[in-house]
Length: 250
Image (cartoon, rainbow, N blue to C red; front, side, top):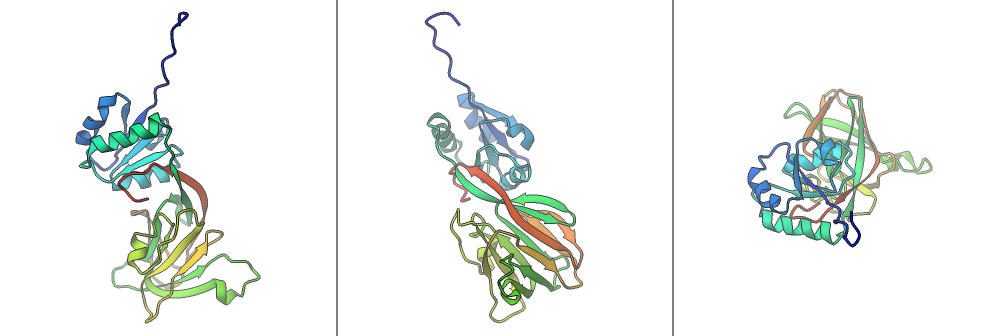
């Protein structure tokens, strides 16, 4: 660079992660600023300054990959790409803030993964009911009857604050605030006239399958594993995901 020349500003890159959606129409509107790159792999998206998660499966895929790059979730490719591009400009050019959302580590006998929204355990055979032991992980000084409960139901859903407005809410659970450090545990179609749900700290929560029924585990809407009776699913903190405000409530 010669004397008197000003250095060019650092280029900031936006990647679009769209594993399940045809992004062509959406991408055409974003490419005008010459800062957008396409990527098909979450690992490649991690090299960008910001990644647009396009489609319902994109966000959960990025979480499962353990990405630390800020994420801008967009539900479908039919959303207004001009307004999305304007929001991206504000974040990139003005160093806009990204909210932190809790990520939960889910450990099963079949493997482990991360969840941003919710984890459901449901009887693998339609019409079957299962039984689950929920250990809330409270202090050993707390009476066992207060920290360990059994519930007969079609299933159980564990939701983070970001996911508490979704499936768990439809099953009768409460909405909890972001940053509260808790999860909700909500029975799905419980075999009870006055069912309970629980709001518990995410310390050492675990759920064990008690009945002789295989159970399907679904993480953020994607099938993850099928568990046999006596299997235990454990939940723990796994850090946070930085999410830029968008039309998708996360």
